[in-house]
Image 1 (cartoon, one colour):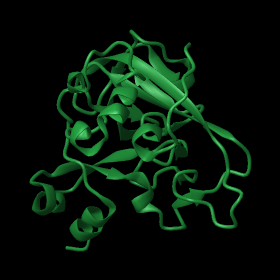
Image 2 (cartoon, helix red, strand yellow; image 1 turned 120 degrees about the vertical axis):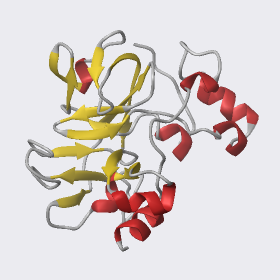
Image 3 (tube, rainbow, N blue to C red; image 1 turned 30 degrees about the vertical axis):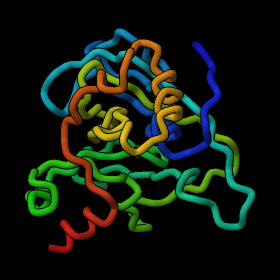
Length: 211
């Protein structure tokens, strides 16, 4: 496993911080903890297909020393059955940049699709979905699939990593090259392909679900 240094900015941290250690991922070999996955394994996606894991990454989140911690270090705990029977089961602890697959016809008015990826932390209600502020360093993980899709994690559907369709337009060229360097199996960021479902911002989610 290679270790790399990267800028502490959202575009880089997003590549590593979706799943907590111990998150169980559905694979063709049965449930496997995220930290035990290896490239080449096949995961079962919410899109009804199996996909090959091509990359796995992990980083350590250090709690902020400030009195008020930031969204970049806080986790989201989804308690058992928060989204319905077995969704999730058991509790699911997600990283700061995790997006879950939202299936709701109200999304169509916002993104033109009844399915969309939404930030997990947007659903925090303080009851069944709560914010977790680590008091000690925690390791978080993410993964890349050969074809981007939604990983099944403890009964929930969580987006696999994708830098975004216009990542090169958003970033300085040197930073974009540095981001590409995190993925030695790729020659270009365009090799990530299409995103399986549209993405919604926190404001998009609020607008859709308030309809």
